[in-house]
Amino acid sequence: MEEGAQVIVAEFKNESGSAATKELGCDFQKCDVSKRSNWEALLEYVDTRYGKLDSVINNAGTSYRNKATIEVTENKFDLVFAVNVKAIYHSYNVLVPYIKKQGTGESFVTIGSVAAVNPTLGLTVVNASKAAVMLASKSLALEYATDQIRFNNVLLTFAPGTVVTRQNRFLGLPEDRKEFESNLPQPMGRGCTPRDIANACCYLCSDEAVFITGINLPVDGARLI
Image (cartoon, rainbow, N blue to C red; front, side, top):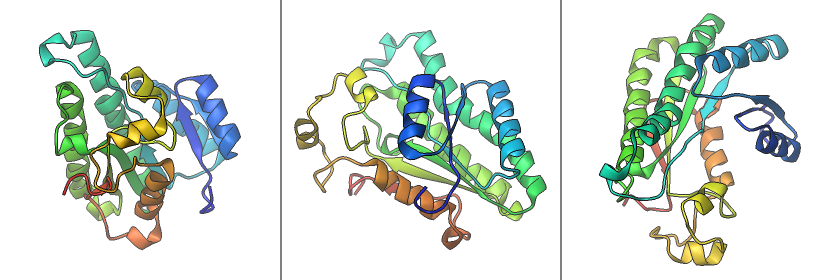
């Protein structure tokens, strides 16, 4: 928003989506990203209201409490891959043809995780989903390079946020920010903030990054070093 973008938040829950858009002053459309029909409806709205699509940030994700892989149910496996992987598949398949017709290139950014490179113990299915998306983005970067459509990944440290997120509480992490950050393994000694993530995405979607595609950009406070 600060960079002049017209932003649409596509969120599954009306309450959280409306709250975010009210705070940010942007647009909101309810969307279950795991369903193709919802992506098609979102694209129709974008085309009708704005007439073009410049950038896509795939940020939806789900997880579960750390556990032995043999304890992960098939339903949980399906949910993780539906949200973390199949949603990305739908976004590409629905939106890329529209962007190709525009003929102006544009950018996809997937919010991934350092777990795709350095797996987190007890989250095998989640690690696998993040790795799948990471490699898919690299492959798509090659496939659509001549169309000037770029695909990049932002790799986050675990549990981003200036305050502990709902997912953090779901995973049983400390609700006190200082207590939470004191246990983080990042050399910089703090968690990743929404602004850290937004700055990376803004750069990858900007004209300054038009020759950058297929990369994994860690926003991790030196976690992967």
